[in-house]
Length: 373
Image: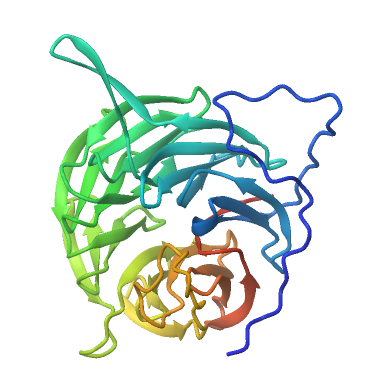
């Protein structure tokens, strides 16, 4: 299929250096950065260690921001003022967060995820390596998974401090979803979900789901948590009251099909769930109440040739464009799907259940976040 020719224009701002732990003083000779038009999308470019702030209608890039190596996921504060990026790392584990002001795209600080604790009467510290899943839980605080340490960190992004950690007691703690009382951590290595009490910052239960549990989202009505089990080609539906698995949904379309379901996202009204299948190169749309598949939409994009082996996902998913990140618009009319190996975002019309357009991106788009009006 021919690629859409949406170009990336000359940047309206400068490429920002990795932020210091505090805001640098404004140079009198340097004009203040311009306010960015809203709404816009923050798109994390994994292989470039950058974040693009783009117009969701045509892909125009308003700002390009340098962050840490291997940015994977991001979260926006409730008031829309801060964007926080997890710097997961590449061959070497990352261990930082980049905090960005959404009004103009200026980097506020880089937080080194150092945990200080007492052991045997001595003060010690450990770095929370491979931060990946992230969600805001109040105006100033986020929860962040540490895949290597098997922990969920509570971080004040305004003060730049790790306040506490809770154990997940599972390996490969990757993505996280939250409701008002709990955090739900999907554990790839253990095939489970760790449930953490946000008030007590303690582990409540580990729920066995399926092999390769990775994508996770709380249904908008708060009744269920959906978890994509990438190795099992299934989705587990967890009851939030009993913390038991209510149903297991099969995403395979044939016996030979390996979908590799990797993310799940709900429409704001909770009627539909979108599941990105990385190996199969499709997005499945499910009726949430009926727990039935409504349609599969093939991404229909050719992966980028990576003869030099510079891409982080190079060769891992065959000929798939590798749809990973899924972000539903605030009005529920569109969904944005990051095709990591094709360097495009495919925009889906959720009324007609079809591809509406494509936005050309930089290298290896993955996590995304809305910066609302």
